[in-house]
Amino acid sequence: MTDRKPTVVLVHGAFAESASWAGVVQRLQERSVDVVAIANPLRSVSGDAAYVRDVIATIDGPVVLVGHSYGGMVITEAASRNDKVVGLVYVCAFAPATGESAFELSTRFPGSTLGQALAAYPIASGGQELAIRPDAFHHQFAADVASARAAVMCATQRPVTEIALTTGLPTDAPAWSSVPAWFVFSDADLCIPAALQHFMANRAGAKGIREVPGASHAISVSQPDAVTASILEAVDAA
Image (tube, rainbow, N blue to C red; front, side, top):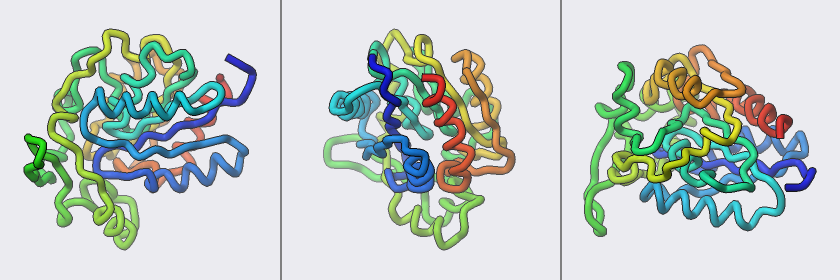
Protein backbone atom coordinates (compact mmCIF):
# COMPACT_ATOMS: atom_id res chain seq x y z
CA MET A 1 0.00 0.00 0.00
CA THR A 2 0.99 3.60 -0.57
CA ASP A 3 0.00 6.86 1.07
CA ARG A 4 -2.21 7.64 -1.91
CA LYS A 5 -5.83 8.56 -1.14
CA PRO A 6 -8.13 5.62 -1.89
CA THR A 7 -10.27 5.42 -4.99
CA VAL A 8 -13.94 4.88 -4.21
CA VAL A 9 -15.58 2.06 -6.19
CA LEU A 10 -19.38 2.13 -6.15
CA VAL A 11 -21.36 -1.08 -6.77
CA HIS A 12 -25.10 -0.73 -7.33
CA GLY A 13 -27.59 -3.40 -6.37
CA ALA A 14 -30.59 -5.06 -7.94
CA PHE A 15 -33.26 -2.91 -9.61
CA ALA A 16 -30.83 0.00 -9.93
CA GLU A 17 -27.94 0.94 -12.24
CA SER A 18 -24.68 2.87 -12.03
CA ALA A 19 -26.33 6.27 -12.59
CA SER A 20 -28.10 5.81 -9.24
CA TRP A 21 -24.80 6.98 -7.72
CA ALA A 22 -24.76 10.28 -9.68
CA GLY A 23 -25.33 12.53 -6.68
CA VAL A 24 -22.70 10.71 -4.64
CA VAL A 25 -20.20 10.79 -7.51
CA GLN A 26 -20.68 14.54 -7.90
CA ARG A 27 -20.07 15.17 -4.21
CA LEU A 28 -16.97 12.99 -4.08
CA GLN A 29 -15.52 14.65 -7.18
CA GLU A 30 -16.14 18.06 -5.62
CA ARG A 31 -13.87 16.88 -2.80
CA SER A 32 -11.21 15.64 -5.24
CA VAL A 33 -11.88 11.98 -4.44
CA ASP A 34 -11.33 9.59 -7.34
CA VAL A 35 -14.47 7.52 -7.90
CA VAL A 36 -15.72 4.82 -10.26
CA ALA A 37 -19.34 3.64 -10.46
CA ILE A 38 -19.33 0.23 -12.09
CA ALA A 39 -22.10 -1.71 -13.86
CA ASN A 40 -22.87 -4.69 -11.64
CA PRO A 41 -23.88 -7.64 -13.88
CA LEU A 42 -26.49 -8.91 -11.36
CA ARG A 43 -26.13 -12.50 -12.59
CA SER A 44 -24.51 -14.37 -9.68
CA VAL A 45 -22.67 -13.54 -6.47
CA SER A 46 -19.44 -15.22 -7.56
CA GLY A 47 -19.55 -13.91 -11.12
CA ASP A 48 -20.46 -10.37 -10.10
CA ALA A 49 -17.71 -10.37 -7.47
CA ALA A 50 -15.18 -11.60 -10.02
CA TYR A 51 -16.06 -8.67 -12.26
CA VAL A 52 -15.65 -6.21 -9.38
CA ARG A 53 -12.24 -7.73 -8.59
CA ASP A 54 -11.26 -7.23 -12.25
CA VAL A 55 -12.18 -3.55 -11.98
CA ILE A 56 -10.25 -3.17 -8.72
CA ALA A 57 -7.20 -4.72 -10.37
CA THR A 58 -7.10 -1.87 -12.91
CA ILE A 59 -6.96 0.80 -10.20
CA ASP A 60 -3.64 2.13 -9.00
CA GLY A 61 -3.62 2.30 -5.22
CA PRO A 62 -6.02 1.38 -2.42
CA VAL A 63 -9.78 1.14 -2.79
CA VAL A 64 -12.79 1.87 -0.61
CA LEU A 65 -15.51 -0.47 -1.86
CA VAL A 66 -19.12 0.68 -1.54
CA GLY A 67 -22.18 -1.49 -2.12
CA HIS A 68 -25.89 -0.74 -2.25
CA SER A 69 -28.49 -3.43 -1.51
CA TYR A 70 -27.47 -6.70 -3.25
CA GLY A 71 -24.22 -4.89 -4.04
CA GLY A 72 -23.32 -5.54 -0.41
CA MET A 73 -23.27 -9.26 -1.16
CA VAL A 74 -20.94 -8.59 -4.06
CA ILE A 75 -18.46 -6.36 -2.22
CA THR A 76 -18.32 -8.78 0.72
CA GLU A 77 -17.19 -11.49 -1.68
CA ALA A 78 -15.03 -9.30 -3.94
CA ALA A 79 -13.02 -7.81 -1.06
CA SER A 80 -12.37 -11.14 0.65
CA ARG A 81 -8.59 -11.57 0.95
CA ASN A 82 -8.10 -8.58 -1.36
CA ASP A 83 -5.31 -6.43 0.06
CA LYS A 84 -6.19 -3.44 -2.15
CA VAL A 85 -9.49 -2.91 -0.33
CA VAL A 86 -8.96 -0.76 2.76
CA GLY A 87 -12.56 0.06 3.64
CA LEU A 88 -16.13 -1.09 3.03
CA VAL A 89 -19.31 0.98 3.05
CA TYR A 90 -22.68 -0.73 3.12
CA VAL A 91 -25.46 1.53 1.80
CA CYS A 92 -28.86 0.00 2.66
CA ALA A 93 -26.97 -3.18 1.84
CA PHE A 94 -26.59 -6.81 2.79
CA ALA A 95 -23.46 -7.70 4.76
CA PRO A 96 -23.65 -11.50 4.74
CA ALA A 97 -21.72 -14.14 6.61
CA THR A 98 -20.55 -17.29 4.86
CA GLY A 99 -23.49 -19.18 3.36
CA GLU A 100 -26.05 -16.41 3.90
CA SER A 101 -28.04 -15.24 0.87
CA ALA A 102 -29.81 -11.96 0.21
CA PHE A 103 -33.14 -13.80 0.26
CA GLU A 104 -32.46 -15.52 3.58
CA LEU A 105 -31.25 -12.33 5.25
CA SER A 106 -34.21 -10.29 4.00
CA THR A 107 -36.62 -12.64 5.78
CA ARG A 108 -34.72 -12.84 9.07
CA PHE A 109 -36.49 -9.79 10.50
CA PRO A 110 -39.99 -8.52 9.68
CA GLY A 111 -40.54 -5.45 7.55
CA SER A 112 -39.52 -6.23 3.97
CA THR A 113 -42.35 -6.06 1.42
CA LEU A 114 -40.10 -6.54 -1.61
CA GLY A 115 -41.31 -10.04 -2.44
CA GLN A 116 -44.84 -8.75 -3.00
CA ALA A 117 -43.59 -6.12 -5.45
CA LEU A 118 -41.62 -8.40 -7.80
CA ALA A 119 -42.38 -9.83 -11.22
CA ALA A 120 -40.47 -12.85 -12.55
CA TYR A 121 -39.42 -13.54 -16.14
CA PRO A 122 -37.80 -16.67 -17.62
CA ILE A 123 -34.34 -16.26 -19.14
CA ALA A 124 -32.76 -18.23 -21.96
CA SER A 125 -29.88 -19.48 -19.83
CA GLY A 126 -32.33 -21.10 -17.42
CA GLY A 127 -34.06 -19.97 -14.28
CA GLN A 128 -35.60 -16.53 -14.06
CA GLU A 129 -34.83 -12.92 -13.36
CA LEU A 130 -36.71 -10.53 -11.14
CA ALA A 131 -37.76 -6.89 -11.49
CA ILE A 132 -39.96 -4.57 -9.46
CA ARG A 133 -43.38 -4.07 -11.06
CA PRO A 134 -43.92 -0.54 -12.41
CA ASP A 135 -47.05 -0.08 -10.29
CA ALA A 136 -45.05 -0.88 -7.13
CA PHE A 137 -41.64 0.65 -7.86
CA HIS A 138 -42.11 4.16 -6.47
CA HIS A 139 -43.54 3.10 -3.11
CA GLN A 140 -41.36 0.02 -2.67
CA PHE A 141 -37.96 1.27 -3.79
CA ALA A 142 -37.91 5.07 -3.91
CA ALA A 143 -40.76 6.49 -1.85
CA ASP A 144 -38.90 9.71 -1.00
CA VAL A 145 -37.89 10.42 -4.62
CA ALA A 146 -40.04 12.68 -6.82
CA SER A 147 -42.51 10.66 -8.86
CA ALA A 148 -41.10 11.76 -12.23
CA ARG A 149 -37.60 10.73 -11.23
CA ALA A 150 -38.84 7.46 -9.75
CA ALA A 151 -40.55 6.70 -13.06
CA VAL A 152 -37.23 7.07 -14.86
CA MET A 153 -35.54 4.87 -12.27
CA CYS A 154 -38.21 2.24 -12.80
CA ALA A 155 -37.76 2.30 -16.57
CA THR A 156 -33.97 1.95 -16.25
CA GLN A 157 -33.90 -0.62 -13.44
CA ARG A 158 -31.62 -3.62 -13.98
CA PRO A 159 -33.27 -6.99 -13.26
CA VAL A 160 -31.42 -9.52 -11.11
CA THR A 161 -31.39 -13.30 -11.47
CA GLU A 162 -33.16 -15.32 -8.83
CA ILE A 163 -29.99 -17.37 -8.36
CA ALA A 164 -28.06 -14.23 -7.40
CA LEU A 165 -30.49 -13.51 -4.58
CA THR A 166 -30.76 -17.08 -3.31
CA THR A 167 -27.09 -18.17 -3.40
CA GLY A 168 -25.20 -18.02 -0.11
CA LEU A 169 -21.99 -16.04 0.22
CA PRO A 170 -19.27 -18.37 -1.14
CA THR A 171 -16.18 -17.13 0.71
CA ASP A 172 -15.22 -18.48 4.12
CA ALA A 173 -13.72 -15.06 4.94
CA PRO A 174 -16.39 -12.33 4.61
CA ALA A 175 -14.57 -9.07 3.92
CA TRP A 176 -16.12 -7.24 6.88
CA SER A 177 -14.43 -9.72 9.23
CA SER A 178 -11.03 -8.19 8.41
CA VAL A 179 -11.70 -4.86 6.64
CA PRO A 180 -13.13 -1.80 8.47
CA ALA A 181 -16.77 -1.25 7.56
CA TRP A 182 -19.25 1.61 7.71
CA PHE A 183 -23.04 1.39 7.41
CA VAL A 184 -25.56 3.98 6.24
CA PHE A 185 -29.24 3.08 5.98
CA SER A 186 -32.80 4.19 6.62
CA ASP A 187 -35.34 3.41 9.30
CA ALA A 188 -38.03 3.33 6.58
CA ASP A 189 -36.40 0.94 4.09
CA LEU A 190 -39.07 -1.42 2.71
CA CYS A 191 -36.53 -3.80 1.18
CA ILE A 192 -33.96 -4.33 3.94
CA PRO A 193 -35.46 -3.64 7.40
CA ALA A 194 -33.56 -1.41 9.82
CA ALA A 195 -33.48 -4.23 12.39
CA LEU A 196 -31.49 -6.34 9.93
CA GLN A 197 -29.18 -3.43 9.16
CA HIS A 198 -28.40 -2.97 12.85
CA PHE A 199 -27.82 -6.71 13.26
CA MET A 200 -25.37 -6.82 10.36
CA ALA A 201 -23.58 -3.60 11.37
CA ASN A 202 -23.11 -4.80 14.94
CA ARG A 203 -21.92 -8.21 13.77
CA ALA A 204 -19.38 -6.53 11.49
CA GLY A 205 -18.09 -4.32 14.30
CA ALA A 206 -18.95 -1.26 12.22
CA LYS A 207 -16.67 1.74 12.57
CA GLY A 208 -19.61 4.01 11.87
CA ILE A 209 -23.40 3.64 11.69
CA ARG A 210 -25.54 6.39 10.13
CA GLU A 211 -29.32 5.89 10.24
CA VAL A 212 -31.29 8.36 8.12
CA PRO A 213 -34.88 8.90 9.28
CA GLY A 214 -37.58 8.43 6.68
CA ALA A 215 -35.34 7.64 3.70
CA SER A 216 -36.22 4.98 1.15
CA HIS A 217 -34.17 2.05 -0.08
CA ALA A 218 -32.91 4.35 -2.86
CA ILE A 219 -30.91 6.30 -0.30
CA SER A 220 -28.02 7.07 -2.65
CA VAL A 221 -30.50 8.95 -4.86
CA SER A 222 -32.58 10.68 -2.20
CA GLN A 223 -29.92 11.27 0.46
CA PRO A 224 -26.56 11.61 -1.33
CA ASP A 225 -25.14 13.89 1.39
CA ALA A 226 -25.59 11.23 4.08
CA VAL A 227 -24.19 8.50 1.87
CA THR A 228 -21.22 10.65 0.87
CA ALA A 229 -20.52 11.49 4.52
CA SER A 230 -20.18 7.79 5.40
CA ILE A 231 -17.95 7.16 2.39
CA LEU A 232 -15.69 10.08 3.33
CA GLU A 233 -15.35 8.66 6.84
CA ALA A 234 -14.01 5.46 5.31
CA VAL A 235 -11.72 7.36 2.95
CA ASP A 236 -10.34 9.53 5.76
CA ALA A 237 -9.79 6.51 8.01
CA ALA A 238 -7.73 4.82 5.30
